[in-house]
Image (cartoon, rainbow, N blue to C red):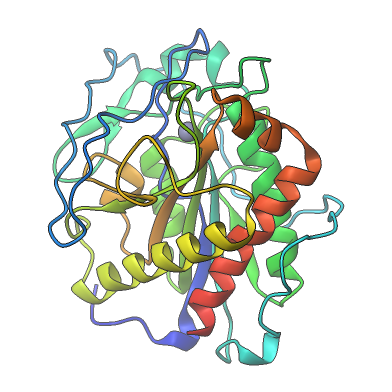
Length: 309
Ligand code: ZN
């Protein structure tokens, strides 16, 4: 819709619209997204086509009422303080955070396997169960916890935060619903929060960038999405405790065209894979409250840097 987004109207949407990256079976074994082919930064190579989701079985739609507030205690952050609120653009700022998966997904396979629009005429599964560490710490719990921490920090800066799901016990919402939340008018940024389930030898974070302009997005918004991804990459590299991925993409960036959250985004959006849950070192960091506080601080720093640019 229309031209570039007036900075004052930008809303920060975290991880909401970009789900579906970490597909995994309901048995809990994670699966890394596609191959590890590393496209050059100058000419991103589209990723392998998305795998078809199981046959649709339309049952009741997953319940999902976005929540606009959180009250989880905030842990001390180990990262440098974010820019002061005065450096942020004036006017209302709204960010959408999209914590991947949901605690009830595994028990409702019919609902999450039904096919929904994923952009460019493709249909994908409503949602997936996500991965987990070898010790059984699930991705949905990790993404929920990190998103709550990020929200707390952002709200401390006067930013309105919208979560794509209200808790960690529900089902869905579907990837297209998450995207729609991120596309609400006035949203300045959308950040999808995930962790990967790749072979244990690899570790580190990667920022998923759309290798083509999202379906329906303006060129200006597409550029802003890339800028948001770069801001997140810089912050994660500096303070998250994670390194740029050693096993996928190129220097912590992975270009692909099969993520509904990115393909459907009409607001600035990025999709983060915050470590490999199957790697022992990353799992230690992701499984500890202190580690998650550190990662969340970096994610928040990236959002604030993007909004302050
Ligand atoms: Zn995931």
